[in-house]
Image (cartoon, rainbow over the protein chains, first blue to last red):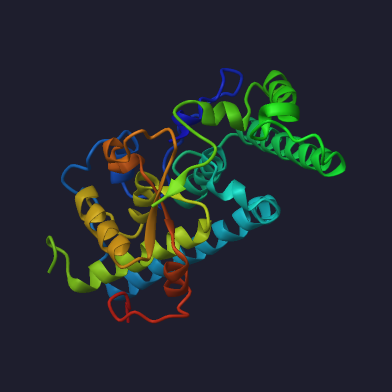
Length: 179
Length: 106
């Protein structure tokens, strides 16, 4: 998944760290798209142990939810169309995956670059909306990048080496549809 | 039993899928990401089993697929790469506003 983001060379990939006991062994195989072979890990037999695991998992999910809510809910609330944009979903899903599975710790550099790119795109979209609101007669042709967004997107890319649009450009789109 | 799993395990897995998707609602998760997080709780889970449960949740209207415009033919997208999210009904079940005996773990 992280590979789909097409992080530029300037963003160092995190080094693989030894996995904690949190994530079971089959996860590594799944990461590379491989079917898990014979299950090497066994579910706990002891009900109390199983219950502990479930409780720990739930606590972790709650923590992840709190972090994602604090990080993403504000743009989500002010711009519901973002919910269906692939770039937004990708960022959200990557952060979720990193937090929920603790598989590869996201590096500070990577997180900072993603956060800056995300913030700049949001700022560009806000400016664009403000501009349209103050100049209702001058409607952009189509989409957020048609008028004001494009220079800003390019500037973000120049500054940080990536942008959400860049992340979404490979086989992606801005308006997925659900069925 | 369903594919070597007990009914309780199946119910628990389905409910955990809803809970995981609830974290990101209304955004979506790819099937492979969802499965990775669930492997913590179900280390022996295989993708085909997981796919079967996703099918079930879609049939019940709790989960829906999100198709990107660039997916010219959505049926060609590998299951692992497909995006899924909760429906409003699924969210209510995940939050226990609505009880579904088929997903109750107790």
